[in-house]
Image (tube, rainbow, N blue to C red; front, side, top):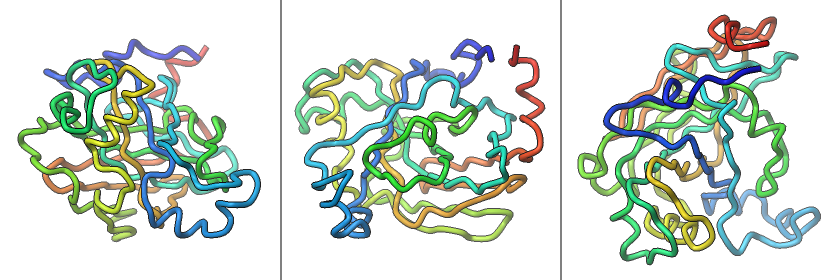
Length: 238
């Protein structure tokens, strides 16, 4: 399969996104609480002491109008509603105090994941599926203000399915940017998905999904049928 040039996928002027997307695998304290003693058993053996990331490669990006690619066997996908942090200037070993100065804006992200039991050893098969990541048009950080406690709502086929906030994370956005920049130089246009709250709903083939994050925006996507790949992808396959 050929993938389109990145600027044809997430082209949101004046934001020039880099094509690099990092997601936080365990971003909420409540998720660790759910794991309980399982966090101390194999394969984990201990709760994570530093930020745990996964990568969304370019094959995961869904263009505006694309459908999310369904599981071939019809299994429902986890609807991961996340706040996407858009990096505005290079960040390398920045302090928490200075971190927000490197944030250009925020967007609504829909990160669809195959059901998986391992939380902070994310499996590529679950996280890097074709056409599994959609993004709303970013808005400027100044227009959002404090993004640390915004309401997040997920609706499936018009019915409320999940309600949470961008709060409750183990790291503030400033701390997240600082910690990640300690071992990864974040480039302008990179995205950080700040984490999916526990209790994320599931949606199957054909479902219409809407995600709203206050002050950031709305995102509407649909999961394709399980019988065939999304029609909009047919011209990209070889």
